Amino acid sequence: MEFTIQLSPYYPDKSYGGARIFNDMLEQAVLADRLGYESVSITEHHLVNILMMPAPLQFATLIAAHTARVKILTSVAVLPLHDMRIFAGEVIAAEIFTKGRLMLGVGRGAFAFEMERLGVPMEESLDRFNESLEVLQKLLSEEEVSWDGQYYKFDPLTIMPRPISPGGPQLMMAVLNPQGVYHCAKRGFHIQTTPLAGRHQLLLDQVSGFNRAKDEMGEAGKNLTLSLSRLGFVTNSDGERASRLAQAEKYYARFDNVFTGPGIVENGLIRELPREQTREQLAESLLIGSAQEMIDKLGVYSDLGIDRFILSVNFGVDQGATLDCIAQFAEEVAPVFSSAMKPAPQAAK
Image (cartoon, rainbow, N blue to C red):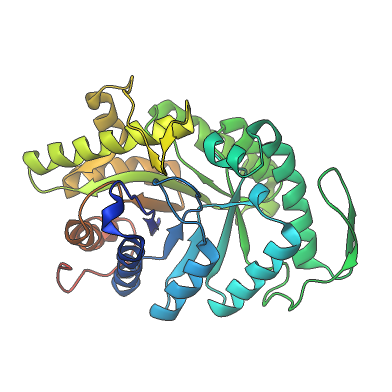
């Protein structure tokens, strides 16, 4: 497996400051680059204080300027919120500015509150996404493109400059539904998925859908990859484990509010709401525990054939402890599964 650190700003306290939270993410990216992580990933969300990143391509460029080799993955760019004629040029510029290290993960959007206030009702988001994706691919791969569809109508145009590589950066599709995983993989897309805080069976079904598509595609699908994102944290005592789990529970009390509804947001802050899932069930689902416990759970993912594991560590833990976790994971966990990872010289402080 390859390993990724997800840079997902969580902003429960406005007094912390936007500049400080984004600098934290940059510091994590620099550390991940130094320790041998294959990539870092950047979210896109607007108007809310979870996964808060309104400018993922700009941030990708900043990360590239401060790192040497780490790849930069969008997880994900929300296509229905953009005009593809403008977005295609921004993607190409980011590909150039990152010196080809950009990987473009795309999706339809997940939070109804965010989508609807930006003019894209959730019931339209799938159709808008599908057409946007077709337009984007065409604009990145061809010149003098015209379009006459439901959401786009334009005369021939050519996006300038042209991409570094034919067709632009590597495209990855974000999808949760196992049948959706199957269909997207069948179309030749790399896949990003997650069971979130859900059942292990959902993960098994997602992997099954991906593998079924690859098997049916034969030689054409042999290079497709499956990336899995999970919230996790390396802990070194029972007390720390309990503390991190409590923080994760508060995080999901906000996340569930906007992901499954009702979407109660006040002055940009998502309200914490009671959760049906017990703390014990949450603990079973997430990767919060000792290095050995993480190795045991990751062994299951490795056996399933997961190609890239995206570790999400930003759920309310202070920056110093987060940097320590990134370093400890690189030193004690990741090398079990990846010869590319190198031990940390010292824990970050």
